[in-house]
Image (cartoon, rainbow over all chains, first blue to last red):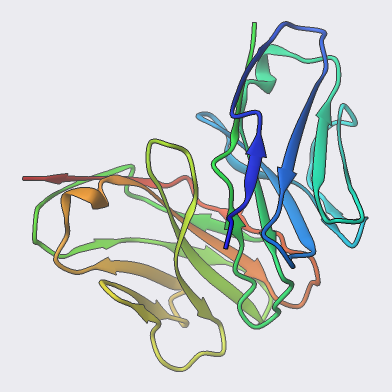
Length: 114
Length: 116
């Protein structure tokens, strides 16, 4: 079956702009979570959506937002981009299996802010 | 608060040798899950192995095994018979199972290089 698909894979923006990243989970998966990966901070949890509701949010400013649609596809938005927002943004999906909680990740969207 | 510590920034191993990647964790919860992921240069996080806090036996998946020592809060990954394709970043992560949300806390990672 198809894996987690993230688009776009690469993008370049300038400071002050906004960006929207998309994530299509594995078919049947209802939970989608987002992570930011930078060389300095490592992998950090942004937020998680389940059945169109945000269930958990990491320690990021309000410029970072997201949503989930009825088909479980998710988008995240970053407004007023800063240089420090340059990162690999990873999306993960899961069925919501409490026994394993295995998350399947996409290949990520690599954002460069100039 | 949850915390994952990986003390080996880099490891260099000869092909076909076994390698152990260290991971220690800190949590106040009794119910939690431990994961190892592999991240090649392409960026994708590839799931390797999972260990639940109540699992009595160490998890194994092919060449991967997890050496789970609960009292020491240790969850080391063992890769047997290493291959050149094993060269990548490896991340240890933890999820608290009492919470409904799918949130993982990751360690800083270990860069593994397999030499021919």
